[in-house]
Image: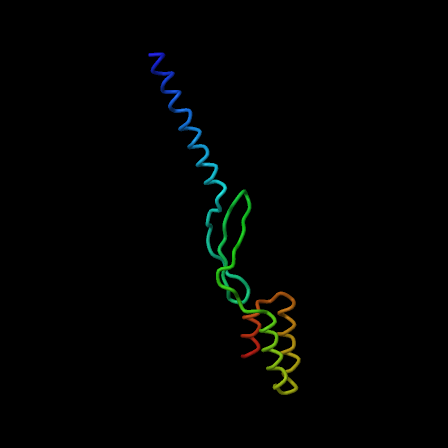
Length: 108
């Protein structure tokens, strides 16, 4: 009986070590957590790895400089009474507003 137990421990030792290595490799892989929206109408995938969250862009959003240029073009051709409001929308992009939403507001 003791010999069988020793043989079993001899066989299980390497298997347990291999299982631990596989689990460690699995833990080092990033786990997908979902998809979030990003400014400008884009999206990013969120992963959890090593106790931290990270995001990788999936679909790029609207470029804030392109949105500001479009709003500025609208302001250049707009009547005088609308220029200040349109400039405010362009400035709001620099203040952190979503470029897509600012452009949408400016075109209403």
